[in-house]
Every structure is written in structure tokens, then in C-alpha cells.
Length: 263
Image (cartoon, rainbow, N blue to C red; front, side, top):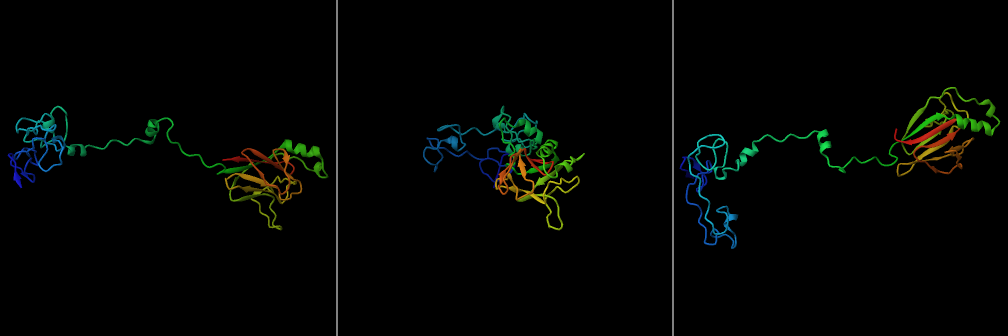
């Protein structure tokens, strides 16, 4: 242990590790500016003894005077009150401890981050195609009129309902059945069209919606009595027909089912 001129006990015997004042002689440099034992070609600047190869080390700070930052009497290289480094006067450099004690910068809010984000920055990924689909069931007066115009043994006895509420069914699972509930047959379709006013032209198991591996949907008519149409064209029974966003399925006497992506 060493004692500096200011009376501090220092573990270092060259500069006081409390106030920074010079205790003993600075390490000597070789004529080439390299400390003894250092690798050849290493200049004094790399060791902190001077500003370049062959230059003498910087003079030690002289005690006395007042700290230009806080006014406390100077006793060494660093001000004991605020940490001001007297060897860098005019640069307003503080001891690293002063920086560590500074309060942290405020963290920007979400809106501030959005405002600061550069154009073309990362955006949220869109959900995979067909991740969510909905079947919207309604009554189509135009389709009903076309069925009536085509005629049939029971066409004259079927009247278009005065009011049919629109219903929405979220498509889930690997298949969704369309038909009419039948306790005797054990049929309980996911899209039950037996709810009043029931369409008399809909079979108990009229059509089935099938989910593809990519999340899209198709429709198949397993053998209904009155057939199924997609976008105005009747589909062959047993054939799987791919569906697209906004396609319309017609069945029965007036039922229309729009298949849409999303809600």
C-alpha cells in the first residue's frame, strides 16, 4: 500500500486510486517509446504513457485550484466531489462513475416507436390464406324465381318466405355438413337449414364443405334430391369443387350460401 501527497491510502504506487495524484515516478520508456518488456513496435500511445512513439509521458496534475465544474478544491487528477478530470480541461469529461449514475433514457411508447419506424419497416404477417372462413346463409329471391320458372311437380306449392334472417356459420374442422336435422336418421349437420322458415327443397344431408390442406374449402354434393349449384352452375354429384372467396352455393328452393374469407 502507498500513501499519496494528499494523505490517501492507495493500492496503486504510481497514481493514487482515490484522487489520482502522482505518487512516484512514472514508468520509464525506452528510446523507441516502448516500455521495457513490451512487444517490439508498440508505441507509447498504446500504453497510455504519451501521445506517440518516443514522446515523454504527460505531466502529472498539480494539486491546487478549484474544480471548474463544482468549485471544490482540487486535490488530484479527478475532483473528489463530481469526478471532473482536470487533465482534459475544456472537454467537460466526467469520470465513468458519473455516467453510470446518470438516469436512464426514457423508453419510447408504442405510438412513438411507430412514428419513428422507417418506411418499409417490418409489418405484421397476414394470416395464412383460408385460415378463417365463414358461410353466410340467406334467401335468394332470384334463385327462387328461376326454380319456379323451371317448373316441377311441387313448384307451385312452394312460396317464397316473407322473411328469412341471415345466419353466419364459422367454418371449422375438416368438414362441415349442410342439410336438415333428423333425429330418426341421426343427422345433425353443422349448417342446419331446418330452422324456420325451413327450405323444403333441402335434403337431410344435402352438401358437404371440405377443408383442403392449404386452408381453403371445397364443396361436394353426396347425392341430394334437388342438386347443388355453385355460382349459377349445377355441380356433378360426388365431384369435389374448389371454392373461392365470395363464391355462392345455391340449393333447395331459395337457399343461398356465400362462402367468404374472414368474418
